[in-house]
Image 1: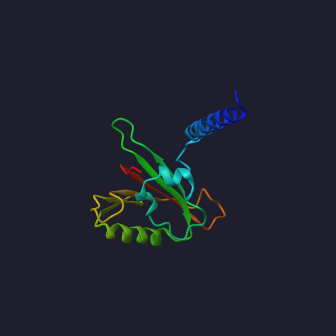
Image 2: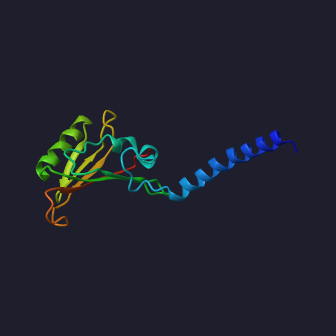
Image 3: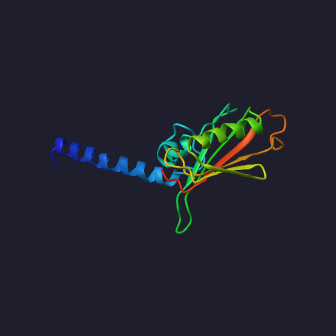
Length: 153
């Protein structure tokens, strides 16, 4: 076999093997349940509706998650972060956000629900749960979890 032909076959083998190895690596390590903004999991695995939710005065980088639908179960999306805002001020931010989509708002036990949002809203529904600072002793930040059902990337 001539050296040029052997060289071309080697390049062809690598051009197939490297993307295949990359695809196997990505599929083995793919977890869009602790995605940072700008990461591949965030860009490809997190629904656009969750990316549009405001993250006001965050103490750190928010973490995003998404689990796709499974049989009759709807998909589940989440954003978790800590904020410097008070619970009341934070709830006001999300009430205003929900009003832009003309959502039906309800509250139950400190949890804000926005449902049936019209097409003007980036998300059809979401659930805001504001935690208490007790798990983070010594922290001035309030833990927040926002979840949504049925939004797909």
